[in-house]
Structures are given as structure tokens and as C-alpha cells.
Length: 355
Image (cartoon, rainbow, N blue to C red; front, side, top):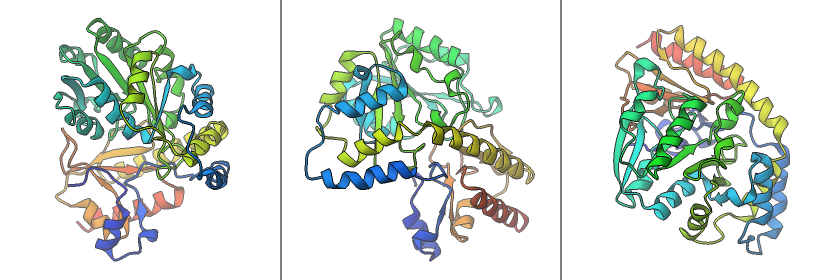
């Protein structure tokens, strides 16, 4: 059973189509591609690969500090957000955790490495998989809470005011709240939804971010954790090997933080293409759920292995079978380029007509 998307190599093997010709709708990467300045920074950095990275990441943390408008002391750079998740589990060693269902699988994987017991807050399909105030009924007696915002795979976002209430209640019981904002840069008016302004107010808050998705550099591996809790930041540094962020990754980040126009352009492009995809999928009598991110969750009512059918056409989509609280009827697709989105809709129509 697949745990993540982006396995174009298996799709190529199954379909007999060259991996470079697979259209990957299973991976939620910015369809506009790597910004040219970021690509140039990566290429130029190769000549410095004969030296160790700065073990304290001084230039990197200063760059992220300016980008996020938080003190540099709040920042711990990681080898992708996934490393940050595993380091959080390792340095905090929680006994009990709360996760929403469905959500990103790496939270559970990381927590299981430290033998943490997990309980789940099932998101209601009838409420469009939104977190509501009912979460307070289950948030007690846990050491850590993970909330993905926007959530993966639903694309739903949690209101800022509700998140602060959750953080506030958790602070009373010394519960750490981890808000994963890896897809927040794709959200229009993200300032209304991000909780980064609460970092200085709550020392039980950790925010996860990554350059992977928005700057289309998953192969570079660069994420970061933010917290005003000095002990947490210090323990994150101790919870794994040094030099965890390579020279090319650091240079990619330093170039990325200057690409604000690119981020704005990407947000607008994805907003328009997401609208097109949602409207076209709905025409096929398929349940589509509101999304604020660069991916869309939908549910088919027919007994079809949609992923298998798309692979035959050289297109990879994400089956949501392995997500808790979802079934094999659910699929997630990324918002891609206009041409690729049109190809997807054309093939989806063909599959649904011939089912």
C-alpha cells in the first residue's frame, strides 16, 4: 500500500511509459516549477560542496527570519519537513498524541518510533472535513497535538481563532501543539490563517514549514521548525546528526526567500486552475471537497480503480486508501499546469463515460 505519492518509477514500470513522460498528479508541487534564480543558486553552490555546511546555519536562519518575520532564534532548519516531524517526536518523546483523521501519515510514523499512543479526531465528511470546536472533547490528556493547516489530503483550512483556542487550552496542560503550515504559502490571504504571529505568545507552539512544495524543490530537501521555546529548539538540534542541511539546500533557501513575486504569482495561478478542476470534476457527478491548497480531494461513487485506469494513460494520481477515515473511493490530485489539467479532465471524462 502506498504511503506517499510521487512514485513515477513504479507508474512507469506498470504503464510501460518512460518515467520522464509520466504526468504526476500525485505530488503536490508548484506547477510553475523551480524559480530560475533558485535553480541558478543551486547550480552555483556545487563548487562549495567540498566544504562542510555552517553547522549553526547562520545565514540560513537569518534569511528564513526575514522571510517569516520571526526572530532567527526561533528557527531550526531541517532536511525537509519530514525530518522536523521525526525530530519533534524524538526530542519530546510524548506518551500520548492526538491526530486528526485523515491527515499526513508521517506524524503517525514518527510518533510510533517513540512508542507513543495515538488517538484520533475523525473529521466529518458532512462538515467538509473541517476541524470544529468538537475537538475540545478529545484534546485532553495528550502530550502533543499535530494539526496540518491546510490539511493533507483534504485541502481544508482551520480558522485562526479556533487554532488559538486550541493552543491556549493545550498550554494549560503543558501540551505541545504542532501546526504544519507546509502548504500555507499556496493560500490566498495566508496572513488570515497562519499562526506564526502567535509564536511569541505561546511557548507550546511549533510551526512546521518547507520550501519543498512552494518552490518546487522536493529533491533538495529543506524544511524548518519555528518555536519561541528555546529548550525545544535546542533539543531539536540534539535529536539528530549535525550538518543535516546541505550547502545546495541552504543556497536554494537563501534564493527562495527573495522570490515573493513568484509566490504571489503561484498563488493566483493555482487558485484559477483549482477552480477549473473543481468545476469540471463536479460536472461528472463526483463529490469534490473545498480546498485552499494546491491539491483537491474527491470521491467517486462507482466501483472503479481510478488510479489504475489513469496509470494506463501515463498519469499518476494519489489513491487515499491508506488515509485513516477515508476509503478506496477517495482520490487526491495536485493542481498542475493549464495544459496538464485539461489532459486530466479529458481522460477523467473518458473513464467515467466508459465505466
